[in-house]
Image (cartoon, rainbow over all chains, first blue to last red; front, side, top):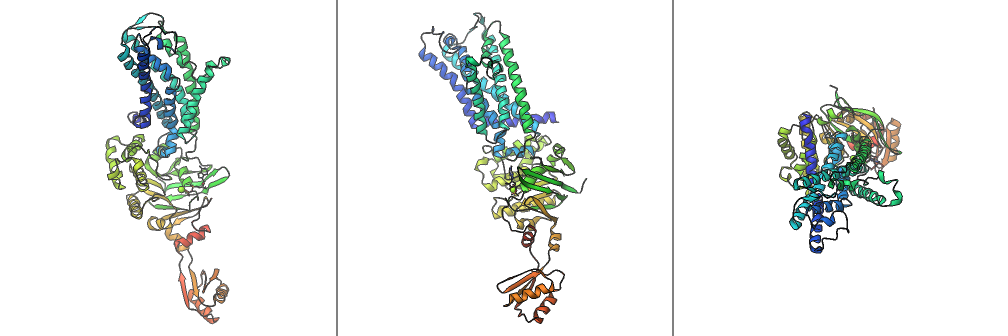
Amino acid sequence: MSAVDAPAFFVSELRLVSRRRRNQAGLAVLAAVPIIIAVAMKVAAPSSSSSSQGPEFFGSITSNGYFVALAALAVEIQLLLPIAVATIAGDSVAGEANQGTLRYLLTVPVDRTRLLAVKFAAIVVGAFVATMTVATAGLLAGWALFGAGPVTLLSGSQASVGGSLLRLLAMCAYLTVCLAALGAIGLFVSTLTEQPMGATIAITIIAVTSWVLGAVPQLDWLHPYLLTNSWTAFGELMRSPIAWEPLRDGLLSAAAYMLIFLSAAWARFTTADVSS
Amino acid sequence: MTAFAVESSGLTKRFGRQVAVDAVDLAVPRGTVYGFLGPNGSGKTTTIRMLLGLIRPTDGGHALLGERMPAGAARVLPKVGALVEGPGFHPYLSGIDNLRRLDAADRTADRKNADARIRSALDRVGLGAAARKRYRAYSLGMRQRLALAAAILAPRDLLILDEPTNGLDPQGTREVRALIAALAAEGSTVLLSTHLLSEVEQICGHVGVMHQGKLVAQSTLADLRAEATPRVRVTTDRPHDAARVLRELGLTDVVTGGVEAAGVLGPIAPEKVVAALVHDGVPVRGFGVVAPDLEELFVGLTGEGFDVSG
Ligand SMILES: Nc1ncnc2c1ncn2[C@@H]1O[C@H](COP(=O)(O)OP(=O)(O)O)[C@@H](O)[C@H]1O
Ligand SMILES: [Mg+2]
């Protein structure tokens, strides 16, 4: 019976997150960025030879709309996607505590471990939806303005439209795992406070700090341990053959972060006094 | 099956230096409406949080419906409906959606009749018409009713209600008290926390009195009343002489004020008091024996009225 009933709370959680106006607005912002990129490239670029300048993938946009999705992911993973995850994660436990709904969930009763599991699962789903939104909006905007077609990979060979879409899906999955690591940190932070906004800001600061430290060459000994160190490795999926090593490192790093911070969240929350 | 729906021994909670709940031994018999009475800050909510497993006792332990807590929480809490420190709901969800969420979180709830149970809970608290309004648009009274609806989403053996009539208008207060009485009549045990003596007098059979974290009295309301010793009150223009006579007779707690002298009668017969007063030439204008009401009893127990204790 519990196997059948267990999803009911999870479904209710997804509904709660997805029906929140703030989250819907956030998703719209995420989708707007690739559209802005596509339009800006269209307006600004008869000179398609400027491929040496600007961030990754931008140079290829005018040759294939597909690259709008990649460029948007590369841009948004720096700040907007972490903010999206920080918003959901920061709200997860602290929001319920803040509204007084936490005490009523716990007296239903919802087991505290189960509550954390459902909250984390919803964060991961949120991260995936956010990433997919960016990719999909980018793809549609890019195709509309620059056309679709087989994609020239970074190594020069061609991928079919279907093959390139599979690669894009894999990139979204990889970034979701990366963002899930931030989500695990966020879940932990959210168990520490009754102020969801404060938690969200703290989580965002953690992600930004990680990016900043990663950009300081003098700290290269630290770089392998940084949360965001392998996030940009999603681009490796555009090689043929795919360079698996950086991706594997990224997944292992994300797994380590999740293990540590989910354990910390569990240790904290299962023993915490709920006096909100 | 134990005789007690709620049983605690030495339940204690310290916040830093402050002892919010101090070695409380609750015994709430099954089938009663138990008034958990105390002024603001006396430790009622903290006790209730411990009972429900929301916060850990610093010391002591307790059982609900015969199940040790918190070990038995998953088994016993589905049979317990609770209202703790006011309502708490998602503001941007409607009342009915808030209840749906709580019901979805309950693994023991029967999904098939969820809609019917939610509907009937809303109707019982008088929120049927406002069910689809967003919670943020609810008045305080409506919020309190929604919290009550959440507490009765499923049939409960025990209801733990923390100040359930807070924020309700007189009409709402009457309705909620009637609802509690009806739930009790259907067989639920009710632990009702309140700072209102009148509420206890109206609907409770048992009472436990909290004062500065301690449970200073616990019995049936009838026993508590019986324990109360009556006082005599003498109206006279020589109250100090009257007071002297009362003291000589062995009355305790003798006080004077204006044209009155009063004291606790004890085992002395009132007619002996009158005779002694007349014998000593005290002009008696009026004489009365008054049984103290619960208010006075309460003041006797706590040494004060309903002041906020820190
Ligand atoms: N989380 C907490 N941290 C510190 N002190 C608390 C906390 N919760 C309650 N208290 C204190 O414990 C005492 C009892 O409070 P409470 O149980 O809410 O009383 P009541 O419900 O009877 O009004 C109060 O002095 C209150 O300030
Ligand atoms: Mg209280």
